[in-house]
Image 1: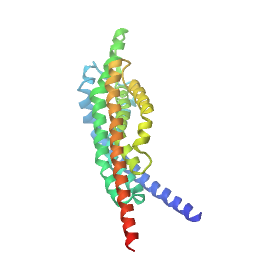
Image 2: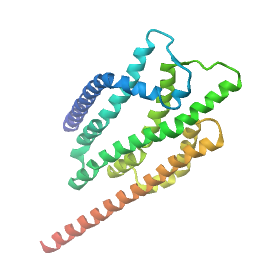
Image 3: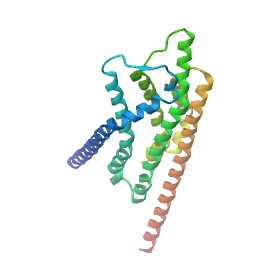
Image 4: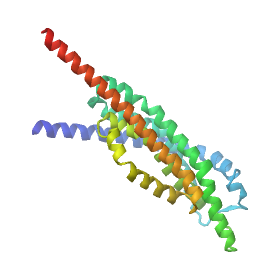
Length: 256
């Protein structure tokens, strides 16, 4: 009992150390993000859909600071992501076999790529649809479009960041399969519920029209199906490795 308690304390201490390092790197990346924020903000304000707006305004003295904070956090998050994933891998590494350690380490570049792909999909596809839809509703009511810069970019980040995280689904599923928490059979059983959740999410992040919902729901459903296939691949390799290991164990027992 004391050994289990000591082991738990060691794990919690290790987890706390990893989290502290992640927070420190995020804080440093955010400081760098403050310096990189201005050219990015200027660029985005001069591209569609922001360039179609007559002007972006500030409605309080804190709006410009809030804008810098938003971009500093977003930049810091992107920069910190590979480091955070590496820290998570280092935390679970002692509980993995040697071949599992090497396999899960390769997930980190894939996770970063999918996160950036999700950002690009959200910015170039979902965000313009959502913005132009809300703008058309405003114009249909003969209202004057006066946008605050902080509110405009908050609207953008509220779409981009959740979608980028959803694109991490295949890597998360593969990782959890490697840890034997998930398997393809369980994912197939949950398919109908997963589809329902993904369609609901697509409905929330897109304008309330059928075409927009479908354009977003289809890639998300494809991500889930890809996750099942990748989980099946990982699960099959696990079974083959265990079968090989049992065969070698039986041979060793037979020769002894």
